[in-house]
Length: 424
Image 1: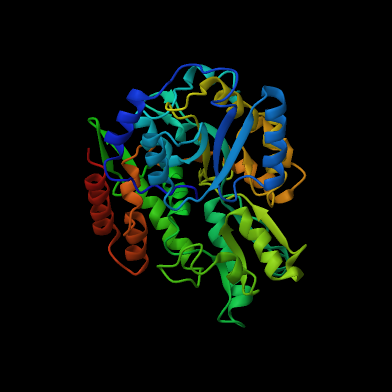
Image 2: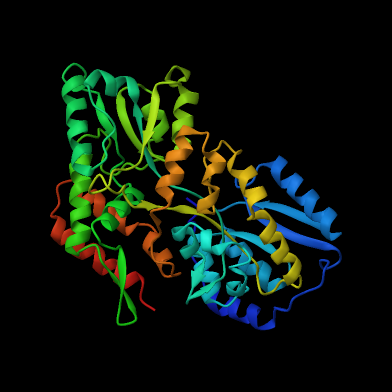
């Protein structure tokens, strides 16, 4: 989610030129020509909230906010071009890897000295990390989401099991569900787990103390072949035995909520959005579903989770630096973060740990927000984008292992390819 990051050719050279000629000064109290240009991505902010926020900002600062909704597809190239020709925004939403690419190229305003003013000591750690580059903060956390386990309470009751707290318990629960329902229905699956669900694998790797890639003498090196990372993959293998999906399946192909709504599945590892989609597809599920955090290695700590989300940044090329900062401060502050996470289908995690209470009344988001505190992200380096290019290395590695390939050989091959793609 929000990691559309194929880098445009010549990005660094182009943006360095833009940064060199951009005005990084404080700007005036009003925008250029009385206008502040703001770009946010599709589905990020509901129209009503955006209108109300912009009305408040315009009234306070005496300027016009020109809001333009953008699409993730092609946004990197569009932003690059707009910075070069002077038509770009003053404030924009950026995906994780995009933030790193623009930061490294020198195209974003350094907001490090504003972190305390923005409440940065309370930001979600994983999301805050995605906005940093070379020890400085260029992106301000906007919102996040992460994965949990959705389950059928009626099936758990019939099987005589309760939500597991540790990974060994999770496997035992899956087996009990299989024994209870599988004999009578060969299409039943205890757990809906896509085969190439690398967002989930990352959490298991981190739980074992592993990484997807590490710095080695100043260069990036793939780390899927370490004992810790392979232990995470082996646990994924054990879980996948209880799923009926194909090794090359993803959370969207087939759509997890569509499969879960068919009534032949007891658990689903998914985003909270799919919980709501399942009920929309089959209203009879309303009241039958529960949520628990992804179990950790022991009952004392839930699993690490991949935190996806967005940041907000100010380009150096903006002539309205001070005004742009005030806009960033407003939309990432308590009032508008609260309104945001209490709307939009209610699947957002707020950018600050202390704001978790904003969704405390929602039993699903309560679990999601708690899990997000242990969230992490892959390397915040623009070269990571190449790892996610097709064919996606980690997905191909997982598919190979789940089809019966040798995990040691496949892990070594995948690590070598990560190293190759992340070279300078």
